[in-house]
Length: 602
Image (cartoon, rainbow, N blue to C red; front, side, top):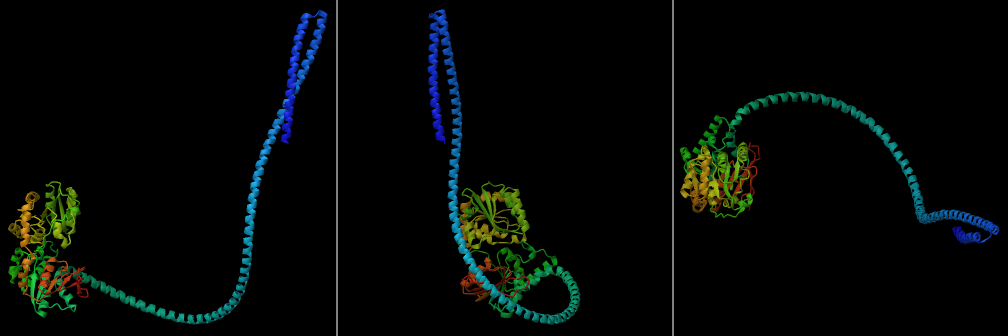
């Protein structure tokens, strides 16, 4: 249809062009006629000219009419052509739309074909499933039939069981009635028992009140009771503790040693390592004066009954001679050991070689404040490390507050106690030792503590307050300084002075280490103990960790003496000394099963 229209439009366009040419020709002829008319008018006679002009005018008018008619035809044809072109455009648009629709329909047809194929496949699958379901239905019908048969049989059984249950229910009802009668009787008895228990509870409460009233004053005398507790635990156990010598740690264990001595024979030696009077101890118990006096008098009697006494210093020995038995001074010297600086301490504290390290150790109960004040008078490169137990807890809190208030948090290092086998090596890394003791404390005033010999073994020069026994030792060997007082200014001045004398002080410490050795005391110890073949050691402390008694046990073992030890400990450690047996009990109030053996480390 569109091709025919196009052909028709072309034909009409050709006609228009032909008419336009004809119009052009007519226009040209008309122009010629006009020229001729003008020429004729000038050359012809008046009559003839008028006729000729009239003819020309008529011809010209006729030609103009034809030209106008032709123009109108051309315009009409152009309008028809425009209308035809619009129709062609509309037809073309409809044709394009139909093509798009045909393509869409073709795609839909393709999709429908694919869908039809899928549906055919699914239909085939569903047919197979239907066949399977038919088989399943057949099977289920068979099962249903079988189940109905079984249900009928079960129903018959249930009916029979129900009949039996009904008979049993009647029987149980009768029994329940009888049980209810018994329950009523039991409730009545329970009410009677409750009344009796309430009466008994009231009596018990009254007795407990009376016991509490009695316990309050009696508890102050618990220390006396505990002096007998050690033997009570020994008596519970079938362990042979007979020995040639019984070595008691402090007077509190002498009663148990005396009973063993009377029972089996043997000498009793008391190792009295501190003041006899408990009110003179570093941390004296807070009990009534009468109770303290009773404990002290018991200690006096125990020491008078001993065959001998040992102690750690001449100052303590002077307080023991009044009791009668011979006294031996057995200082807490260490075994000879050449400890060498290894840099462990500086690494532990994160300090370099330019910092100065002051070191203190052991139990601290008084006197730490003055040392902290002294540290503020020293250069900021001076640090203090304390491998110590600061007690009681309130005093430790006070010291921590003082450190904070003085701005010494970065220079004071509270580390706690070191294992014994690490002490000498770590201490050797320090520059100077400080012995923090209070000379006004009765126990400190007569002390010669382990830390003196720890410092000596590590060849660590040290400063100490005016404690007579320690002052005598450092003056004899020259590796330390006993200060005239323990004021902060004196501490600071002494530290400055000693830091300038370290080489000669360390040389003196090496000489002291070679002289003050445990080995040098062993012969005298064996002689004082009576050259025994067996020794039993007794103590309320944990003897598996008490270095003094471990050194004594080692000496005895090395000389072929069989050693047994009995002590209080809630967590003893294995002992590595041959030919020794350690036993412990762990209940402070005598409620345990008796002694238990501590495993040997070998």
